[in-house]
Length: 114
Image 1 (cartoon, rainbow, N blue to C red):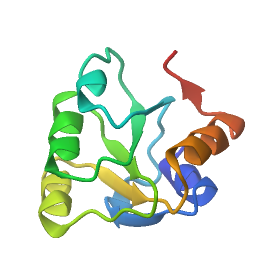
Image 2: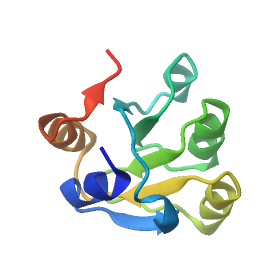
Image 3: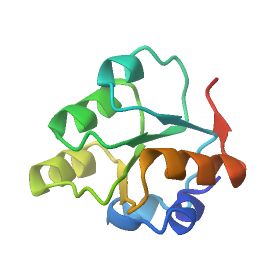
């Protein structure tokens, strides 16, 4: 699924990485526990989270995640966006809950990791 399709499904704003919207992701993972994200051994996924802080960006960087959707209408601050841009990430911000966002993307065909 292309990132622009994810943005459309989730009614999301693109806060960073608009040039990456044509990139494909194969799977999605939803978590507010960054320690769980670090255990993932997969590539080409989008992370959905309500954890909106620098830790989320740094965790995604360490896990080679190039796209993050912040849910519950939470907004990334400028230091987060600067770090995401530096790491070539796409940051989306959705008004929907983590549960609804996950369900909508699953229904649209995005595969879960497990």
